[in-house]
Length: 212
Ligand code: AMP
Image 1 (cartoon, rainbow, N blue to C red):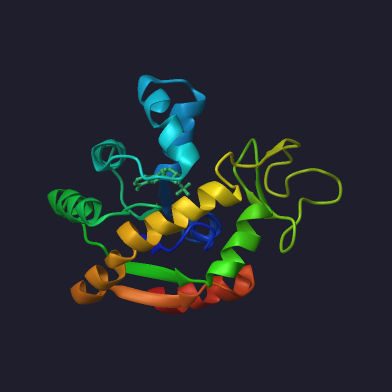
Image 2 (cartoon, protein in one colour):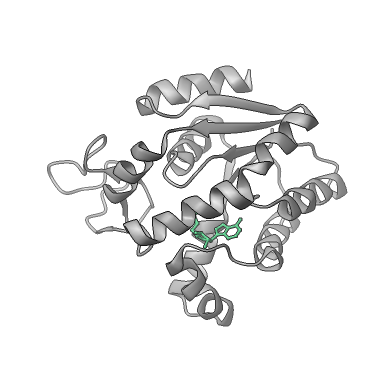
């Protein structure tokens, strides 16, 4: 099964992708994580995208399609695309790549949330520096003993682009460039929308229904 999690920044794509990984043995492919890795390890590409990411704009289609192509070329199946595709060109490219591999896109799950909730969520979020587990000061705080519940790590970081200024640009990029994908996949017949505002488990249950 290959699925896309679609939704604005802070909708919960990363959190739900990790749950699907653990519970269904799928593989999360997050272009945001791949780009942050490139940036942190100081590769040429990482240096090129750092400013764009900090501002909250989209990295070029060529770069992100290249990253996904590389991952898919490594083989396997059962992918959760998280934060990709974000433009119509990326969606077309993904369709072509899957076709080349004789694979299908089974479902595109759109996580719906309102904009005010996004700002509140994003400014409260942090991740474990070791395993990437996502925490939120309001809904899923870091455990009282200061240890990640998933891996026991003790270092937590906040994303550089999780500030109000970048968030405005990221939201605008979502509405201008990514939200047309909702209609695109609706027309293809594999779109499902779930309410992303509820508790993590409630959203998980809705996704399970959408995937059944
Ligand atoms: P994310 O972790 O998905 O919120 O992505 C963080 C940042 O990485 C975005 O604000 C973009 O600058 C960049 N990025 C991630 N995925 C893509 C994509 N599919 N297309 C273009 N830029 C992306």
